[in-house]
View (cartoon, rainbow, N blue to C red):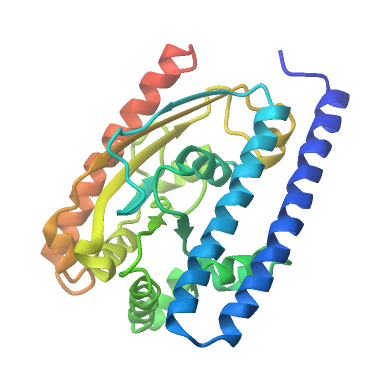
Length: 302
């Protein structure tokens, strides 16, 4: 039984207040160190300050995760590969169920792999406080062109590739975890029906971002982390995550080798390479869909 609405409101408000206070505190330190990094143009200092910025980001996540653990009765069932390393770079590819996915992934992988970064829409840099924090933490921002624009101006596809390459270039010398939601958007039954693809619990993956990232990063990528997120109680909102509305979270991850041709192929111009990547990711998605079905069946929701 879910808690009564007044209890959910009180707990959710407390958890949200903790999140806001935590964000303000760590962002004040983050912005101060970012300013110091900018005004002292010494490479050694900038490398050191970049590590300090990541440490601040991880501290912010740690306190957020602690706040969830003390305010929420959520049952966490997590299985991760024992071989995960902090000194290796990963391409992290999860399914996308809800707005709760990112705090879930941050909690699960904190301290296990390098700091998670993901591509953001250019407009999000204007989000108060968080936009500047993402910029300070070297989150890559991208312009997202609509399908209509890309059809009219196909050369803009090259712009996306170049932006990806430039963003990944700064990560070649430091361990990083690059998060890619291959579905491109959160799953809903309506989006699934419109996709015309027969997955029971997933949207069809868009493989361009995965291929572009692999090509831009090259062999510095250690492995692909295939991550499956399941909410047996139903897909939650962020408010649900804060207000005792998520009874159970299941996360399963496996480490997969990245095919060497992904590092050198031309996804846009080489049709054979593009079809090969699509087939590889499609197989991962079929196995992910089956895993979600098995988890839901085990809990009586299949």
